[in-house]
Image (cartoon, rainbow, N blue to C red; front, top):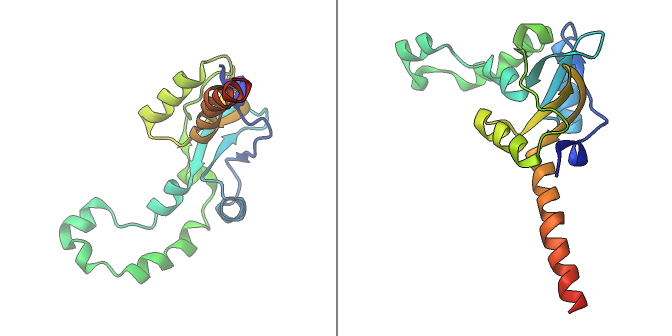
Length: 157
């Protein structure tokens, strides 16, 4: 079974010059954990994820080593969110996003996601975004291929 058989084709993407407040609104409203970043020609240039946004709120390693987490005011950290969402996508996105081709086997795509600790990954042809596949897509495809066939076999027996 190939990526193209199970990937989502109607992909929401964002531009690198988009304001982060718009992107985090999409993330929160539509429960996106991340979005591909494309240029004007729909070429994949990066990825922006919730972890990119939230990690901007945390103290640096140096600050933590100097004072430790016990000295950090968590409510003050939460307040930094207002500053983070004033940035542009290009300020926090992961550049040069990892992607998979549509003709890759779904388990190979799952292995790529596992290697990078991704829950979803863009699907691209010659760097042009054509879809997204998630671990959930892979799991559902394997379930359908195995369990629904087994159930059908039990009904026929």
